Image (tube, one colour):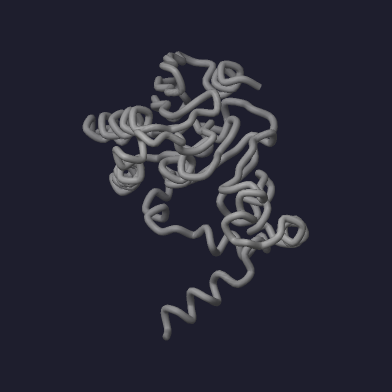
Length: 238
């Protein structure tokens, strides 16, 4: 499904949005009230310009002081591989963007990310992974690094990584593996207006609980990260 089809299925009432290159912003009405739509489309390579646009939109929502829910649309191939962006400190701009999402969370705005296409590396981490909750379409492609790149960085042979990825979600890309690791709350297969309304209502009813990150506990329950809690416990008590 393309972006237009997904948005029309989720927001049939008073949906208005605009796409500027890879950047999308808009608003819609749900049974829980108005929501803002912010994010990326068309497998965006996120550069300085896009990151700042997303951050500015987030700050505008917070500035209104109305606790408006935000739906982050995620479709990114990762950070832009540009020398110019690196010289301009894209990593610091990503940190600013992540801080803006964190401020949105601490200001108690219900918010979640919806992965429409790709969710890769720093582009995903900078805003999509920072949201209170993350949902994905079942055909989404989610990964931090493909196995060939991982092999070059870690010096572990690709065939060994491929073998490990069959038994461990930590080494494996894909929406199902990120679900097991607790990074994705749910995979949406049949789209309807109730999905957004339910997600927003659930957060509104227990917004305080989203101040802490429970993903490692979810990952243990789903058997995606079996050692994480033990390691953290030993560190905290050392």
